Image (cartoon, rainbow, N blue to C red):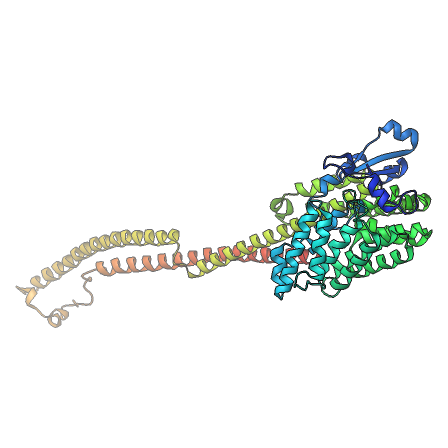
Length: 546
């Protein structure tokens, strides 16, 4: 189970690879050993937090307490198949992993697509054979076909400008725990090949050039060429600023040459990019020469993350509380969104921060970030749904108002008018009947008056008074005007007037009542419309300020 390599501390690079040679896939050497102080480990992470990073304790807790140091192991087998970048999980003794990152692992089909000539296509085919040999551990054969792809063979010119060829060549020459034959491993040739890869990748693939400079820097460091290693690693950072391993390697080189003050700066950057560099640095012999300074940096970063996570939690809980209490009249956040995921994230953040470790505070910040995203989504769901509901209600009110404006007589008032007409008809018939009775009585009175007049005229010698004219009758004191009228009134006229007035009054009263009802309903809808528009405005303002 190897530890990280440090130059000039007992073993050369080829000897280090030989001592830690891997003879089988299941060999224990597939685990990388870290030895860190108990105080540092407690500050950095709990055992549970380390296990999530595939780092496990390999010594009992009682042994760790007695010695003051803890042995941790990182399972390379757990991640080797899925490594996508050179991060804290990478170790140069497993340099075969270099062939699996970036565009080095592009398929032959993809490479042939970018070939511009038959010679380039042939070179890529030789490269594919070399990769197959490398995969099978046939390193001499892989070198043979790599040389063909670069220099050409049998009339084929090769393709010297392809950085992938040089990078794989450097990887083989750098060696690994599986590839440690003295006839293969050559640090000088490895450095030269990686520099060629960087040269040819720099223009079109700066990240690939950055990895190449990093590997060249490691080859230089392993030869004891410390100034060159520092320069090459700085070049890697300039081309690939997000490459955490480059910052760690620069810090290691600066520590090695006795410059901890400047070495802490790239170490901080490496740890910020990948937390596991804190463990890696605590166990690396170049850093352990300056345990006090490294521990001080970890304590400072621990303190910073503690304050940052504490402040983040305070702000988050305040915002979560405000969200739960957010409402505009009957429109509340609880009605439109489930806050359970938000509460779970906050509780997870509190639990992580409660571990009082650097990893715990980073996890707390991660949970806080997750909670902020959830909070933002809940806010948007609340505002969008509430505003949508308000607008739907406003649309319904508009439809109702249009319906009221365009509506005919309400059924209630239509029935009232119909009842009024029926009552008027019945009343008019009744009055017509009364008028007919009155006319009959009036006819009898009139007949009696005529009978008295005729009797008087007969007494005066007129045998047939009915044959006299009114002028003749007037001479005896009688006149047509003084005679009782034939009728009190017109029965039909009475019927018509009562019916007409009843119908008119019923229609007028029905329309007045209908208009009053529509006005009342419109007034209620206008008040509700005004209230909802005010709510819409308040929700919109809250959404903008959220």
